[in-house]
Length: 178
Image 1 (cartoon, rainbow, N blue to C red):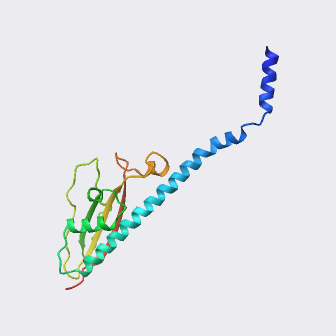
Image 2: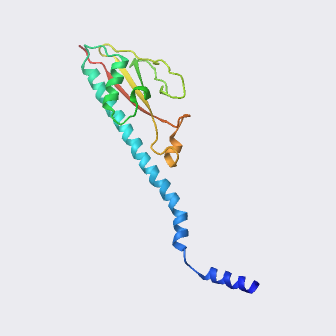
Image 3: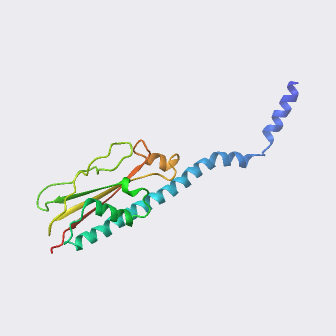
């Protein structure tokens, strides 16, 4: 009985069938995580580029159209229309517009206000329309759902209980005179 088990063991040890399968089982999960992280990074870059572009185009309209007093809701709606890839933009986007004194040492808060589905709705931190020749900062923050929230980069990006991550776009402009 023992000699039979020994001969089976020797035969099993000498066979090389399944080597490719073992290599595949070891390597495939790492390649899959790497591939999904690459796709997630592409979507993060796409969302950020669309948000930046939408904010820049909206600020251009604000800068050149000084006769109109823009409201928070108007600007948010325009940014959301132009940032096409941001899902549920109306509730996932928050804007701040801050008037700055170019000669004073005043800085904007380091952490932007962002909407968060797990928190209560917060009022706008600061949104002040500028007058002619005033230095203004417009900062938009959007919360985005990862494409693959349970693997690789998507798992690491989530910074709240809903697994969303924040993208911000900041721009500075001078209100053109009338």
